[in-house]
Amino acid sequence: MESQEALDRFQQYVEAENKVEAKDWMPANYRKQLVRQIAQHAHSEIVGMLPEGNWITRAPSLRRKTILLSKVQDEAGHGLYLYSACETLGVDRDTLINELHIGKAKYSSIFNYPTTSWADMGAIGWLVDGAAIVNQVSLQRTSYGPYSRAMVRICKEESFHQRQGYEIMISLAKNGNEAQKKMAQDAFNRWWWPSLMMFGPSDAHSPNSAQNMAWKIKRHSNDELRQKFVDMTVPQAEYLGLTIPDKDLKWNEATGHYDFGEIDWTEFNEVVRGNGPCNKQRIATRKKAYDDGAWVREAAMAYAEKQKAKKDAA
Ligand code: BYC
Image (tube, rainbow, N blue to C red; front, side):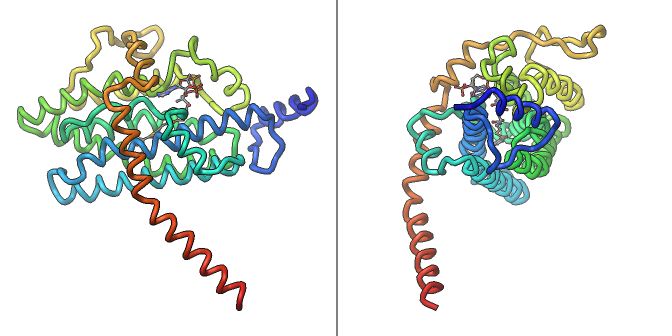
């Protein structure tokens, strides 16, 4: 039973900008919220390897191929930092992965859309990693120490990811031929709205926000971060000569921000519920990769046991 006194003390501790560490006392719901969010974040990184993995063998040059390969590997690494951060809270990785495979755990809606052209590699790096950075820069200051430190490391790599995507878009949309410009605009049209959805439901419909902002797990609201992303990205799109697929988008002199149109929340809810264009395919691919990799995990365990036995005998 958690006493009000312990809860108040915890609240003061996080309000004073102290970091909570794995062995510190924490409210059960704080732990639960962290496991939920960090696990979803880890799953997003791992499932997020798939849309881009789709283009590694079809990259247009050796340079593009090596860059894309490294980026996808970085995403595996991000998943591992995050699963490790989650494990510090007392859950094991097999449990987390099983929850993804049985459809119990969520992951970011964005990875349930198909990648149908090379320009999608540019749009993902620029927009999806761009949106991820806006969110993750804010999470560097999250109150849970292991999550915060994982974010610092991830943000460094993520800013490179964003720049490589923007560089692809410059080649296609600014310096490309007519067909390449068209391909870039088409990719932009398909990824713009799903990127805005990455920030989650509007603040008025975000059940986890109030408590998690109070505990400083989240540092900015979904709508604040979404607005920041729009303000940052519109001038970049203008530089590329791309048209933003939103007739309501306009600069608002009074607020100093861009106003933008209403997000299709029906589409968002459907994708989160598992009914997006690629949800089933993504989970089936992840599950197959996990099953096919069983022998690697078994071999690593057998090797570790052998090493331990050797050490114990010495
Ligand atoms: N997709 O109360 P709310 C990357 C769920 S990957 C699916 O606002 P919260 C990359 C939400 O979980 C980066 N579900 O939630 C990798 C909640 O469900 P439950 C991914 C979503 O947690 C490869 C419900 O809706 N980044 O960088 O306060 C290649 C109500 O929402 C989504 C992260 O994961 C969504 N978009 O706020 C390239 C960041 N949005 O659990 C790039 C960490 C909401 O109550 N996560 N839901 O059933 C967060 O910052 C927060 O969890 C969110 C949502 C802002 C996403």
